[in-house]
Length: 94
Image (tube, rainbow, N blue to C red):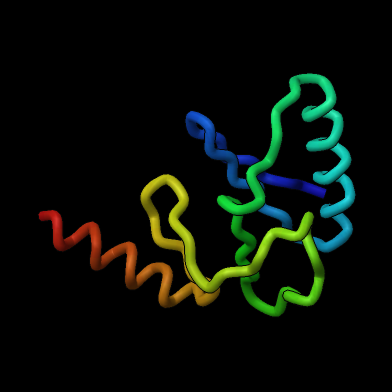
């Protein structure tokens, strides 16, 4: 299994590809929390389901959304819409 983590300042994005990865990520976050005292702010957290992901699968009570920004790029639950929106934002700045 390969889980991708993108970290910037106090923001962390975790990309989970398979449902089997969720318990591993949750356990890792639990260990990190116990070691550092850090907490996840669920109210500021989002889950985004891409493709055929089952949104009835709960991930730490984090609500699903249809779009989010990651490092300034718009990510939506539709790949084409994500590319189009991000490209439009970038080209409008030129």
